[in-house]
Image (cartoon, rainbow, N blue to C red; front, side):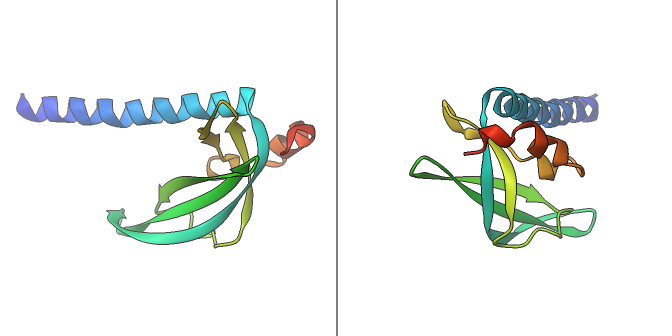
Amino acid sequence: MLIGCVFLVLGYIINAQKIRLTRWAAQAYNNGKGGYATITAIKNTNLQHNNRRVKEYIFTYYLGTLEYKFRFKSAYHRQLKTRQQHLIFILPEDPNVVFVPFLFFKNIERFENENKDELV
């Protein structure tokens, strides 16, 4: 019974994070502005996933003259390197709400083609 409750709570926490991320992505893509973010740092974490070291990728982007950072942790994005630029969608009302299509989709050309006029 106790083990079942523990798994129920863990499942809720994991799904709540995924739902929040999906909401942010939808808000930023539908109501935000497109731009580009640069990977400015890649740090090792103490976490492991499937015997792989989890890395933290730090993206830097600007809205006007203000600089913002977006942090993304993954064990499966080894192709990312510092100084790479990637398409990003930013919600101007809350610049911390961002969506980086490259992290979730392999074919991002459709995002670039649909939003060329909006890029900041």
